[in-house]
Amino acid sequence: MSQTSLDGEIRDGRHVMSVRVYYEDTDFSGLVYHASYLRFMERGRTNYLRLLGADQRALFEETEQEAPGFAFVVRSMQIEFLKAARMDDVLEVITLPHEVRGASVTLDQRVVRGEEVLIKARVQVAFVSGGRARRIPDALRAAMRAGQTSAAGS
Image 1 (cartoon, rainbow, N blue to C red):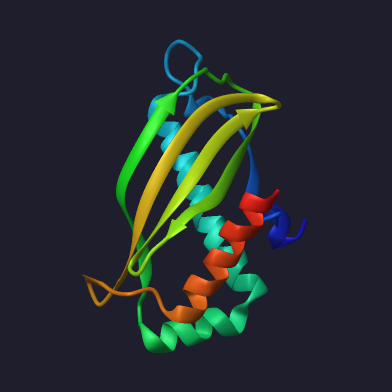
Image 2: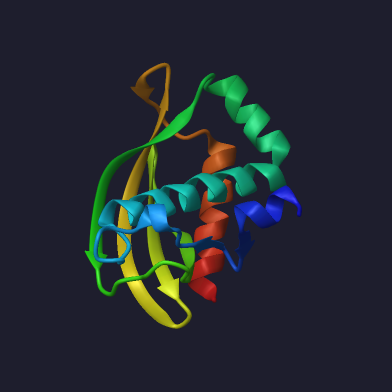
């Protein structure tokens, strides 16, 4: 199995990643515990950025030179829990850029089971380097905006 398939894939500007629900993801009632969805979405955001960098390795190397030790950190999150998932369900976490600004990017995320939307979230992440918020380097911001444009057009 390739690393890319573990990380999901970017299709039409959207990152799509499959997640199987395990016993450890559920609560005593057998439903997915609310915090498990946060972990699923974190993996989606992380893998979106990983694939953005994997497809554009030079871009991430340039970003690392400009902003050593850079990271994206969650600044805010709005989340709606619409329906529940259960053990053994196979879910998809869909991540797409909503707005790319100077030092932050806002992402829309959904957790779906087939056609059913279970979770909707809007997450603002800040770009930091050296422990401080910094402007996202131009090349990285352009790559994210390209994804935003691609996702809006589909």
